[in-house]
Structure formats: C-alpha cells, structure tokens
Image (cartoon, rainbow over all chains, first blue to last red; front, side):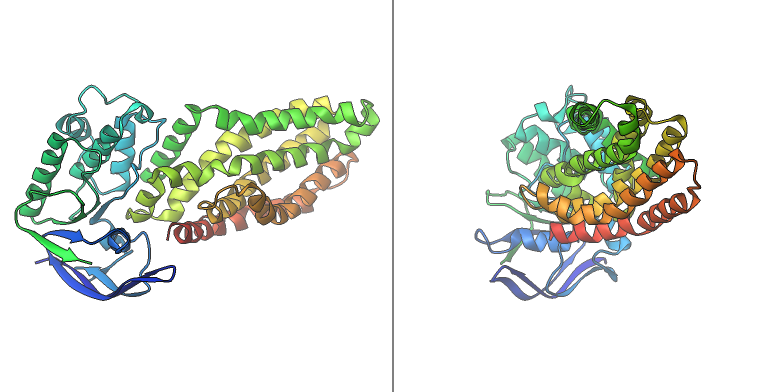
Length: 200
Length: 221
C-alpha cells in the first residue's frame, strides 16, 4: 500500500523552532487532521509536504519518490490560504489553468465540476466579482477533478457555508475510500468519520 | 510544451483584460522620447545624432517599469504557489511568462520605434538597425529582468531595488545596441555589435529561466 513517509522533519521560522524531528507515516485511505494552536506550524508542515518550502532537515517521500521530484509532485494537490485565482479570468478559465498545472481528468469535466460545487451559471463570471466563498469553491472544483492522490488542504472550510462544508467533507471521505490520502487543518468542528489526529 | 502555451495564453489574456498595466510602460516610452526635441533642440542635425541613445534608454526604462508586474500578481493571489507545487518544470512556466512579457512590451516597442525614429530625424539605415537591435535585445531585457523581478517578488515598495539589481546588467546591451545604430548612420560595419547582442540573447535564454526559478522558490519559502 502506498504511504507518505515523513522522517525526522524539522522546521524553523525566524527564531522559532516549530517542530523538531517529526516523524510519521500516513497510508493511502487515511484522513489526517493536523491540529495545533496558531503558529504551531500547521501551514509550514503542509507547505513542506507540498514542496513549496524546504525543511531545515528531514525527508519526505511517497512510494520512494522524494518531495519535489516529478513523481511526488504529480500526486500532490496543495490548497493554500490564498485563492490561487486571477480576478481577470472567469471561473472556468481559472479552473482550466489550475487543472493544467495539476494532473487532471478530462477537460470536459470542468464545467460539470463547477456545477457540482454549486457554481452553475457562474462559469463565465470574472473571479474578481465572486465572493470569498465562491472563489474557494472554484479552487475546490480544481481539487475534485485532479487525479492527485495526496490532498493537502490548509483550512479548506474557510468562507464556505454549511452546505459547502458538507460537500467538501463527503468528497474527502469518497477520495480516501478510493485509496487517496488527505491531510488537512481546520479550526472548525469537523464531522469527518475515521479521521486521525496529528497534534503539533 | 502544452503547459507552456497555456501559461502564455493565460498571461496574455490576463494582461489584455487589464490594459492599463500594458499601456503605462508604452505611454511612458512615447512621452519620454517625444519630450527630448522640446527640451534639447528641434534641429535635425542635433536630434539625429542622439536619437538612437534616446530611444534605447527610453525603451530600457519602459521595460524596467513593466517588470514589477511580472510575478507580483501571481505571488499575491497564490498562483505562483500552485506553479511551484505542480509537477511541471518551473523554468518552462517562467519562460512562458517571460515570453508573454516580451510580447506585451518588447514587440510594441519594436513596432513604435520607426515612428519615433522618424520623429527624431533618424535616417533610413539608422531606423533599420535600430529595429534589428531592438529585436535582438528586447528579449534579453525581459529575460534578465525576470531574474530581478523574481528576487524582489516578496518585497514591498521594491521599485528602486529592482533598478539597482537590473540596470547594471542592462548596460552592456545599451552600449552595444546604441553604438550599432550610430555607426550604421555613418555607414560603418556593425557585425560585431549584432553578434554581441545575439550572444547576450542566447546566454540569457539559457540561464535566466533557471536562475529565476531558483530565486522564486527562495522568495516563496
């Protein structure tokens, strides 16, 4: 079974040691919720796992593919704090580019993905005119059509209404039931079944 | 290759829907060149001597003015993070962004240059060489500029810093390009200058996307 291996990971920001010699293993099918107070290094950990920033020390790999290698990066979808959308482009154009950057299913599924997430009729709307929650939904649509196995979600429920949260939770459950892996952080109560907790 | 074209068309589309970011440097280019005859002398003999220098300095400053925006928006809205975490080669994505930048600033400058050349009484041979030097060297300006733009991407109010970083690297291009134009006006050979500009273009094409990608990764840490 595929697994994400984290070995002796250390991270420092400024003078603060966020975590030191962190080791854990997450298997395909796991839903891992990362908890911790503000500033405990949740985002830093996800950014390291996404290959965006570098750890001071330690190793990360997925099935022998080390982080930042092509074999690793194509299995990762990282959802950060920012919307990752251009205001000058429509939802569909943004989604097209986002899915071109990530390993994705067929292009014709993109409109369907926008429908599924509750943005029917907003395909051609410029993202500058969307609300924070709607912007979040565009990038979540990108997540749902990606073929990536490892989902790294930093506060995925921010700005979403209860129905949106429900959609995301059911997609996470479905993804992990199909052999995916999801690591996420949230300060909201999450009703996800079988979630494991990683406390920083 | 596919992702190269997609990034290129995305960047062009974003820029064309926000035309002021494209037009500002070009207006600066036109206005600054057209002020020289008013300030120095409207005489043909004086202007034709300094025309190549004026147009080259103005186009260099116009490119410099446009560089701030190269990575800034994508850094702010988080698209850059997605680019870094994707499995595509970051230098290729950056090369696509540089190409878009050249299409939006370099090509309009090349197309405007004969008009401004006539305006400054540059003769036919001079205008021809001016366009050739611009064609050879504006891609280098975009390529080298991307290194500076990627280094300062996370820093606020960094306009001056960008000039300090980039202008020294632009100086050789300025010297060889404007000397090519003024020598062509006297009917002298300009092969040496053109070879130098071509060498500079190849060198920056081979190195700038890679250096920029490293700098961007550092900025995103």
